[in-house]
Image (cartoon, rainbow, N blue to C red; front, side, top):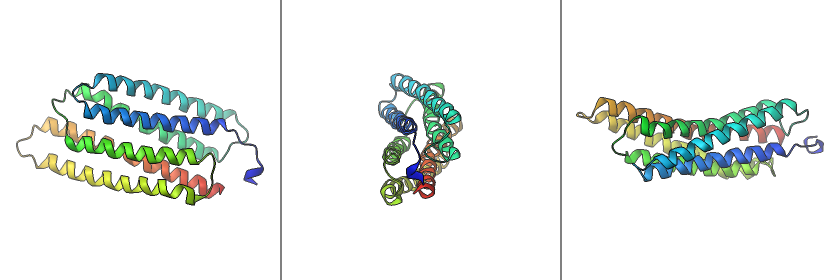
Amino acid sequence: MFNLLPRDTVFFDLFESLSEHVVSAAEQLQSMAASFPQTDKHAQNIRDLEHAADALAHTALERLDRTFITPFDREDIHALVAELDDIVDGIDFLAKRFSLYHFTSIELDFQKQTDVLHRAVTALDKAVHQLRSSRKLVDFQPHLKAIGQLEKEGDDNNHHAVSRLYSKGAADPIEVMKWKEFYDRIEHAIDGCEDVGNTLERIVLKNG
């Protein structure tokens, strides 16, 4: 029955564009950490991407409100759009606080996490693009498996980094607090990739 219904392909354009903004934001964050302390250009680029992602999300939800027949369930479309947008929002949160927190150095463990995030959103982007042409879970599994493995890697990195922060007997407690927030926020962004992956899996299973 699903294949007999007309599909609004604009939704797929919006999903893919949102996903590409997620990748671009993660790339900018990775470059920002690598080029520290020269962060202003990357922070502005991320800010621009966040505004653009918000506009795409708004457009998608407006279209959802006025479209009678949608490619799949409305709640799944809403979840997919919101979860993709949330990742960009999380990256923007980090980018803005690079200057607000007046860091004097970059943590190598944080740089490692920006790499994990970039790899996770790259796998996520492939899965989102797959949605246009397939409803077979087997076609999504390589990307979903990669996201799951990267979420575990990010979780392990986070535990190691936070443990190291708290083990510094002479460390400035304010610096510890700031970096703890950074590690938690980037871990949340990585977790967000798994959330999107779960939504994609649910869509495929319901519509396959």
